[in-house]
Amino acid sequence: MVSLISTALRDGVWELELSHDGPALPDLAVMLDGTEVARAVASQAGDGRWQVRAPLPPEVLHDGLNTFLLCASDAPDPIASLPVMAGAPLDPDIRAELDQLRSELDLLKSAFRRHCRDGS
Image 1 (cartoon, rainbow, N blue to C red):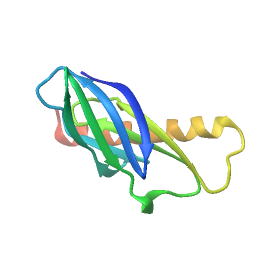
Image 2 (cartoon, helix red, strand yellow):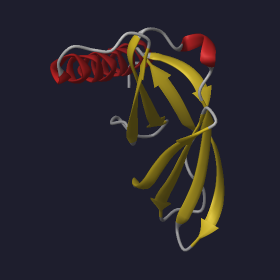
Image 3 (cartoon, one colour):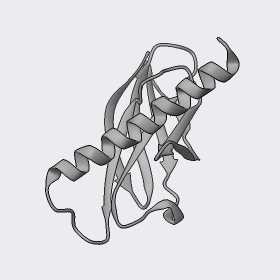
């Protein structure tokens, strides 16, 4: 099981520290609106801790709230989420929550379609 220790955004790179007991982390992808936009690179930091860096492509950012999700290939739920607001400010916080729910729903739809397609 992979769990989040800390997260930061520096120079367009999402940096995370994760905890994982296995010898290697599963493949990690950054998702936006149900689409993979980047791959994350992990390096072992010792004692079951991993440093993960995921570049956020500037071409996928748009006005409003962009909620990036870090997903492991072997887990149904996102490990972490990173909301990034750009352009015009949002009205109430409910819009931010709605955008995050939409992102997670897109991820679930894609996983369900893959499950049905593979027949597993």
